[in-house]
Length: 132
Image (cartoon, rainbow, N blue to C red; front, side, top):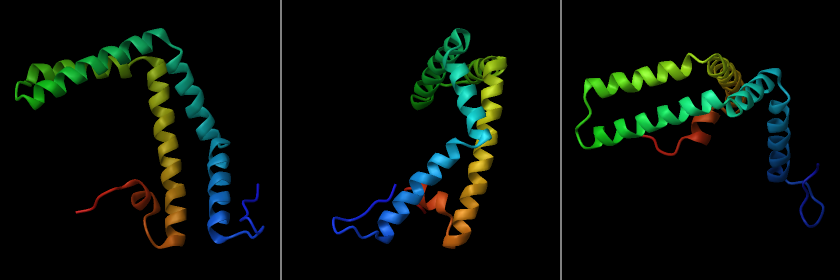
């Protein structure tokens, strides 16, 4: 999968792009990623989980609107927290959240490896837009 210029030359930019694509593909082959992808698919195909997700998102949206207008109260916050707890208590969702957390930890480790070579926090610089 060599990326070359019109003259057939492999440039540093093209080599980095090639390595980035290989890196992304390699990540998808990690067991921790496979576990996450399978857990995500199970959540997406679980009717009860999808119903609870929709309920939670509706309650969250209503809470956010109330907060913006200054009408949010402790009862609304409790309702939101209860909906989240109910969603997270589903075994399929609990498995998904655990797999997501494991993947995030692994990606952070990989970020640190890349950042060490660059002498800059790669993930922060690549993902962040603004700094104070």
